Amino acid sequence: MSINLKLGYRFYYNNKHWKIIEVYNITWEDGTKSKEYKIKSDSGLISFLEITTDKETKFTFSFWTKRNKPDFLETSQKLTEDFIFLGKAKFPKKTTFYGVVYYFDEQVDGICNYGYEKEKVNSLNYSSKDKKKLLSIELWDDEIEVSTGIIIKRSDISKIEAGHLSILNTSFLNLINKYVNEIIIILLLLFFFLLEKCSNKNSWENNSNYNSSDSTKIYRNNNYYRGRSFGGFGK
Image (cartoon, rainbow, N blue to C red; front, top):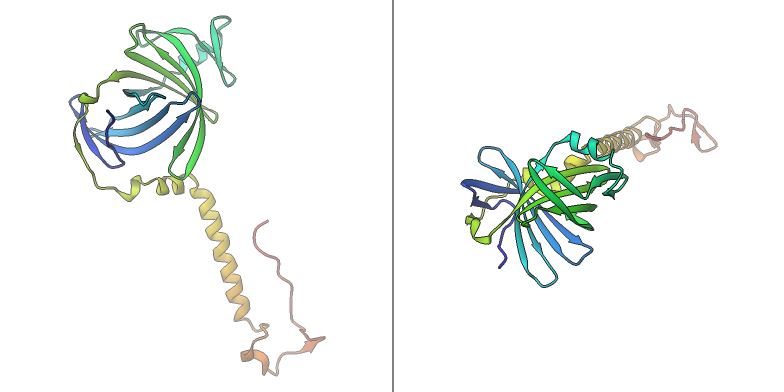
């Protein structure tokens, strides 16, 4: 049985209250689909809840933590055997990570839909011998993310409450934040363009009804003697 969770919802898991601050929908090439929730605890801890649906509509719940371990990435690139490529990077088919032995399961590609954006993701999936602990190595554009997870039960999630959405958590605002520099440049160009149009409209050289009777203007071939050609702003 699945679960009804949305952006801004709160729930209780592992003795903590969590709030959903972002939602990702991933369609994998093997026919499975994942709904990934970025969640934040009351103490500020960031984790991820993932609900995966296979081709038989079976749901799997997992809880994930991102890991920052540069030495693992560096050591992996020195491998000479029993490795698999993720993009141009190499990773072992068997590895010990934070004291857990993981075995390579599969490599799968997918498309992540996040609000107004879509992004390709390539993933290497590992699991422990009992399949209860998970390791994921994902390639997003040119960035590699390493995460560890555990399989959990649907019943582990309780006290679900619909929350109040903050504009700061909307996907539209996240899109704006991502392209804030480009948006500022466009707005500045638009401002100067409008300023120039306004200036030309109210200038002495403007050929309007207001200025048409101005006897101080000198005409030459139907053009103002003082007329000048102005280039536009930008490149």
